[in-house]
Length: 312
Ligand SMILES: Cc1ncc(COP(=O)(O)O)c(C=O)c1O
Image (cartoon, rainbow, N blue to C red):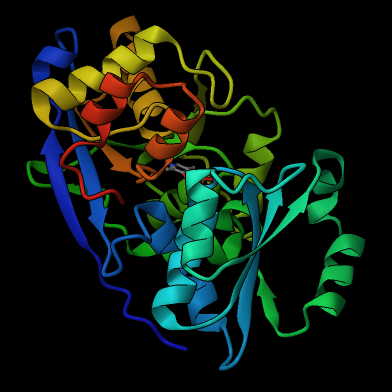
């Protein structure tokens, strides 16, 4: 099946008042996908699977109970009319979980897999047994991050800000596919993954998404202070400030945490020679519903952060 690859890109300059002086310009690049619910990096990372899928074939993938990737895949299945299965890392499927509700509303079949079993999901034996159980499904890895997923990111024009070429390209990084795609597309530009997970294997995961016959030495990873999904009051206040003062929509798990880290690095002087940063807004705003549901955001914070943004 072929889908249109084109998405629209919008650029927004982060107001200089958010960063201490002297600071590089920070341009935020958001992607408006032809299918609104396949937001941010998901639109790009799913392109290859959408194109590889044979007529009559479904797509099966993996994710946590609040996974942006599963939410986007479910939307793709609904929009392009193919079946989807989501293997969810959870003991039981909470019917009130807003992300899982959304997946089911889009027709995704959900299967719970406890944490221990879920750890095997990348192992060949486990994948082979899934292929036998679901012969009519294309299997896509967690987060859509493999070489095929990274391939889809090649169309992202991240270096071309409205003010001219950026000399640092960055994005929130978790499973590594998005960063790999950016690195591959811009081999001579400095790329920085802003890691929102604590995962010592992340550099290997990024490498695994890059062609093994080429060497890329244009990239590095910076680590956020807190682990995946850990939200400090400071971080939430930062996301609220971005929204309240500049109408920049973020959520604190991925894009907000990554931008917060970027500003921290700039303030510390770690990016002293950079003139212009391009930050890819990877989407993920559907996750705000789940943060509110788990009471990680107050009602006021949720209303502010989720307001007037197309919930992508
Ligand atoms: C909103 C959002 N931003 C960033 C990422 C990280 O992207 P990657 O897993 O390709 O490193 C994810 C996870 O896929 C995400 O959902």
